[in-house]
Structure formats: structure tokens, C-alpha cells
Picture 1 (cartoon, helix red, strand yellow):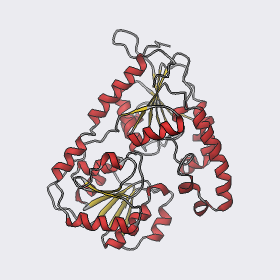
Picture 2 (cartoon, helix red, strand yellow; picture 1 turned 90 degrees about the horizontal axis):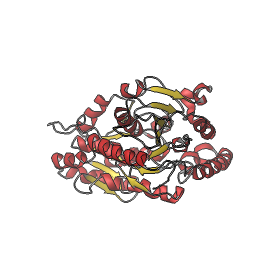
Picture 3 (tube, helix red, strand yellow; picture 1 turned 90 degrees about the vertical axis):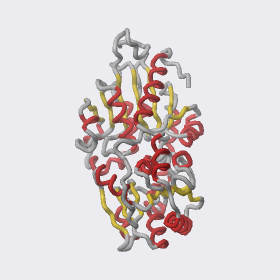
Picture 4 (cartoon, helix red, strand yellow; picture 1 turned 180 degrees about the vertical axis):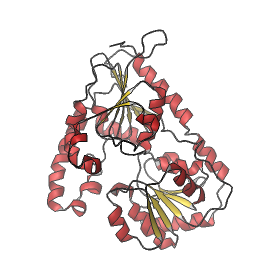
Amino acid sequence: MATSHGPDPGGPTPRVALVHDWLTGMRGGEKVLEVLCELYPAAEIFTLLHLPGSVSATIERHRIHVSFVQRLPGAARHYRSYLPLFPAAVERFDLSGFDLVISTSHCVAKSAVKAPGAHHFCYCLTPMRYAWDQFDAYFGPDRVGRLPSAALRVVMGGLARWDRATAGRPDRYVAISQYVARRIRRYYNREAEVVYPPVDTVFYQPVQVAPDDYCLVVSALVPYKRVDLAIDACRLAGIPLRIVGQGPERARLERLAGPEVKFLGGLTDEEIRVLYQRAAAVLLPGEEDFGIVPLEAQACGRPVVALGRGGALETVVDGMTGLLVEASTPAAFADALARVRQATFDPAAIRRHAERFSRERFAAEIRAAIAETAAAPAGAARW
């Protein structure tokens, strides 16, 4: 081990391991990892599964270690089916040569086992939703059937107990939002300060053109995102909807949708930026832990209509950068859409709000928090 006291300009350079749940696309967690890769260019990445070419070149150029999940049948498309094996997979990572472990975790990464004398800093995207408070959204009887749901409830109960039992492994938790910090306190009995995730406010910029008459959803197509609610709301409001994203819910959502809904699949960041810039409004119908999409849209000067719960309360200013909707119903969202179409929003004010969440701000804050953690006595869970 190089040192147990973290980064020191006058001492040895610590070896850094970045532990991430899986690398299958560039979502919010991967954009956090990308900044960490820039801050620690010599770091090695440990992940359950890596689909080459699915993440940015900044991430891909690092040395990437994968778990045994990578070799399981059909893992590239159906890796979530192996969820009960994830605890064993993350605990088998050999981190013995690393002084500093930085985990970016929404599933099991926070439970990686560091070497004695090393430090573990966890940037927690959320405690795993399906094992704690959103089981029915993923595995309820109406989703998977009565008997499979009952069996999975037993499996998820065991996973939740393991998740709580390993909550002491990081020396420090930093959360992506106050909402997630409260979840960490509830499920892990640990305190966490907040460093908001990065938004690329240089890339996402407004354009001086009138918006088109469509709403936009950019989302993984999974149950808790409530894309079905957006479809029903836009039908009631009589406004076309465009949906960017892929996931296991796509076939079901396509059956719900009418001709006014376009499923665009996975698009490049450049293509998504154009859609943001031209949208009448961007929708966030689900309860999010934070939500990068609303801020990318606001960086483009476009208003957001979001459910007034979770992370949206920290990213959307009601009446200034969009509207917060109290009820999780199609009628409530349709009413908000009607009000957005009639209202006048100031794109410059919307953008100024988004600039508070820039990549540069995130890099500075997270680097300072990691350095403070690495300078503490090894093994001291001070936070």
C-alpha cells in the first residue's frame, strides 16, 4: 500500500479503485463516473458488467475489471435477472492493492470490501430501490405474477438485510440529494452530506428558435419512471409526446400509446440536445432520487413539468423553471401541461438556475470531499 493518509502532494500517489455497479450506458451515474475518471486518470474501474462501447471514451480508456456476472448466459441483455448474485460478485473484487476506493452506488457497489488501512468513499446515487421501498413497482403481482412476486419478496428481503449489514463498509457517504441523504439515514443509519451530480451546462445550451408543440420524456423505460403516466397525460392534454430511452417496459408502453406518441429508442447526446431545445416542455412523471434530465432540459432553457416529490423539489423551481405537480395522476399532469402551454417562461432565468449544477462545481466539491476522507485516519467511519 502506498499510504494510508490519502492524496498528499509531497508523498506517494495513492492507488485508486473506482467501483461502479455496471457499465451498460451513459446515464446519470455514468456521467458522475466520467468526472471521477477525469479527476483520477490512473484509477482502475471495477464493475459487475461492462458492455464495450456503451460508455464514453473517458471511461473506456481506464483499465476495467469485471465480475463473474460478465460470463453468465445472456448477461449482456438480462443482467438484472442475476440480481441475487450481485452481493457475491461485488465482494469478490480484489481491492487489496488500492489505497482509496471510490464507489458510485445505486445497487451493490457500496459494499465492496476495501483492504485494511485503505479508505472507502461512497457517492451514493440511492440505496437500492427494489430491495427497500419500491418492490411492487418492479416485482409486484401485477408485474411478474402472484407466485413469482411472492418468491422474489423473499429474495429481496434477504438482499435488503445484506444491504443494511454492509452499510458500515464505506468510511463516508455523500448523497446526490437531500432526498437520498434521508434514505441513507433511514435504511443505513448513516449520515450523508450532499454534493449534487454534474450537469454539462457547456454542452446543453439554448437556441434562439420558437419551441415545437411536443412534450419530451428522456428516461430508462422501467416501472418507477412512470412513463405510462406521461403517455396518458399527453393524450388528455392533446399534445404529442416523444420518448427517448430503452428498457424492459417498452413493449408494454407501446401497447398503451396512440399515434401521437413516438418512441425514439436510444439517441446520441447531440440528438437529445436538439429535442430538449425544441420541446414545449420536458416531463418527469416519476419520483426521482435526483434527476439529471430536468437540469439538462433547463440548461437548454426549457421548462420542466415534474412530480413534486423526491429530487425534483431540489432541481425544479415551481413557477420559474417549470411546474411541480402534486398528484401522480394523468389529469393533474394534463392540467399542468395546459398551464405550461399558456404561460411565458424566461429561458435565460431557467438556464441560470441549471448553471448552479455545472460539472466544474461538481468536480471541485467532490474532489474536496474525497481528499478530506482520504486524509482521515484509516478505517474511521467519521460520517
